Image (tube, rainbow, N blue to C red; front, top):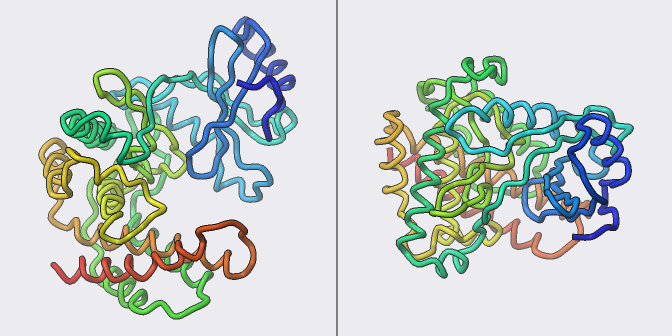
Length: 340
């Protein structure tokens, strides 16, 4: 822990705000460190020498408030606090930009390990790896079993037409970042548009559910699900499909994706789908469409990153490699849809 202010977190101002809003919470000088990982919002662990908390705020220089909505993220975590879904307890939401320069919220610190690599899991052995992966699937089932209305989230999204809107959104993103030929990507989009399935009963959707977005604790249980910035109400099979799509990392040579699914003991795709279907009671017969959609979405995201790199808007290493990951995703998406 550092007693220096990390970027985006002025500790004196945070302390003054906490003392005012939650008197007695902090008992000593604050120190903080930035937590690596997460999609884009900044996460800090804050320590007063006795207790620890977590602070979340938008990235520095953010210009799209709707993309980094602290109130929305705080709301869904707070709502899930009384359910079977493990989430940190929220303590405070601050929408006043004058405190830290952006909205932020504070939640309890939850111990646990975010397993990000095959090697981390390999050290545990195949039995524990299987237990963790099974717990990951079971927690997703628990999330999708929550009645949004019962926890005050009936208006958290618009489930009607969710799949159509998702497809339109990602097509719009694709059109905004076209800078080269992408064989098969329009065919993939058109196939998806022509075969949108009957939607599942709407649920709370995490939006980026994977092993490195949860904390695993003692007994190989999931202690907390993190990174709710993509959450909404929608079709739960989009979560399952993205979890399965990430597991195709090695097949598609997607080096930017965590390689946990290749660890000994990690269940195969069929086992993950079967466990979800059995425990949730949901019909997964149309899952190939959702998988095709997941591959399309990932291809568009990668192409957007590559486009910004090609336009000189992003500096750093590895972006050429990200660009080369688009074609395999498109091909895999088309092949998946042809299987039906």
